[in-house]
Image (tube, rainbow, N blue to C red; front, side, top):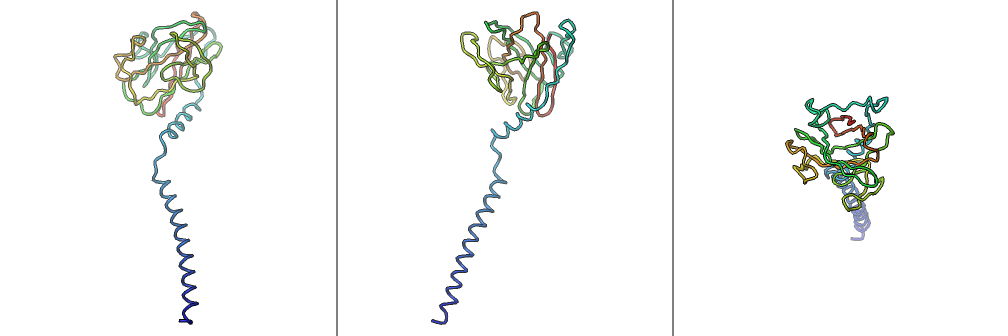
Length: 215
């Protein structure tokens, strides 16, 4: 038995070292496997997609003067049916004046499903002030505040539409676009007087980017 003590103690030490190494290596392997098989959180994935859309530069047309401004393109070549080249379009609705400016209840619509978020941005063609968005689907940085229909609202620099949610007809302020299978309400606002309502619009989604002009 005396002769076996040294070898047994050495074996015990080796077993302890092997066990510690196995736990360490196994833990690292489990963490790596877990990171590969765990889905990316939806919020992070959406933020990354939105950041990519926001990084796209605005490509709105320019005109020498207000009289040169031409609206278009039109939905199915009908000046009363909406603006845009597709697959998403914009259609104007009622306006609501405040001491700050004028808000427009508009609709973004589509005739076929759109994959991914849809980013909406707009800028004034003469002066290049950004058009603001309030209410449903308003997104991006807060650039101001106003009182609209008796309620204080935050003005945002852009609008972001979740295309997986369809709004068929959200209320009497948006009695437009109801004949399209996909319809989303927006409220845009600008400070320019009525005779200078000329804006360029850009709609961006992962699969497309389009522009139209409202003069």
